[in-house]
Image 1 (cartoon, rainbow, N blue to C red):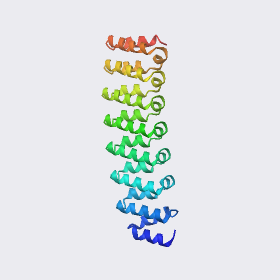
Image 2: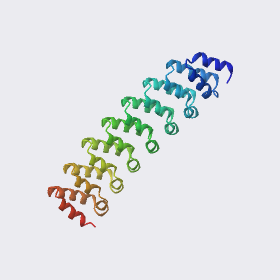
Image 3: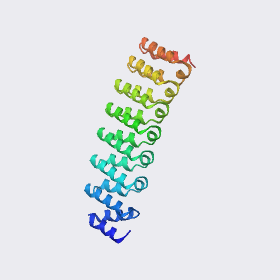
Length: 263
């Protein structure tokens, strides 16, 4: 790096430690690019997160100087939020998403009140692999509609759900979960692998409806998710078993006898 560029950095940047890192990180850039980044850092009051974006090795490899400047501007618009910064520098996001994608995700994240679970949807490796940017935005909005409920968030990032269900189906199941008061057994029917494997989304919704009609009884839930029942009985059979159990006033001996017949 030329002496005049070093002097320019020293004159512009008030923090000595920051000066050292900028010189080390940006020594491969053209003078105009360095000027551009320094001006943007100045516009941001030499904010620590903005400075990190300017010098982050992964960002420097994956983004142009102009893209860095745009990302810093969006970060500023996000009030230098820690998670918004994380979206900019996350290696998986940098690999799987464009700068335009990052900006859209940061803006949606801001509209989601900088919620930690919304951030998780943005940076989760499985979500980045299985879903598009548009899908992520829809899922973040659906999560917001569910008041950032933990079970709703888990439906979004669960690897089995991502594999077996579409984004549309995930959103529908999140709405069903909300309508069931975020009941834990409803949540488990949605994410249980054998249910995802053996039943369609429509089947899951019917099972949840029947479970709700059974007052979310633990053993009714057991009928809905039991491996033997799922393999040995049809969807209609399951519902009839759940209803029969309810009609017997949730008598555990009755349900035991029903299940024994299947072995």
